[in-house]
Length: 140
Image (cartoon, rainbow, N blue to C red; front, side, top):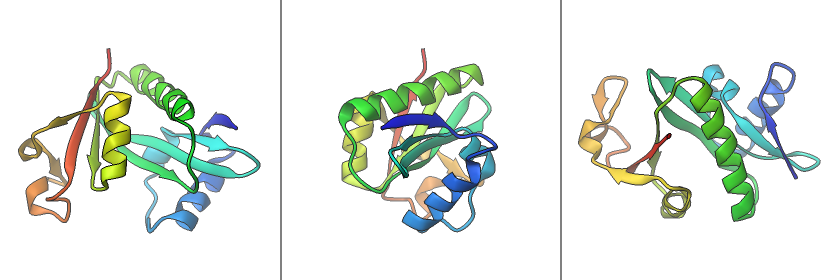
């Protein structure tokens, strides 16, 4: 398995993968282009972020099969390096599933108060994500 950066040549393949394995309707191209994907004869999964000033929101963390912890860590390091180059200081993840929460905490994310988080200028507690956990990762 190899980790590949999303670029102009492969972005349509990654978008098709996202549509195929998830319920995502509209693909955010900026977030897509900030991504990395795992490839092994086909796209196995992807991780990407969307920038908001010096913060970035994890947008696509989607896999069609399990991957090793080592591969997750390698993938995450590539995302952190990409975020650093864009002057991002914090990664934010809004997580609903307990399994994902465990993975993000293992990577180094920590919980923050969701009262301070807004989606399209609406407080998170007033959205369908009101039961989600908000996690943050500080980029050194």
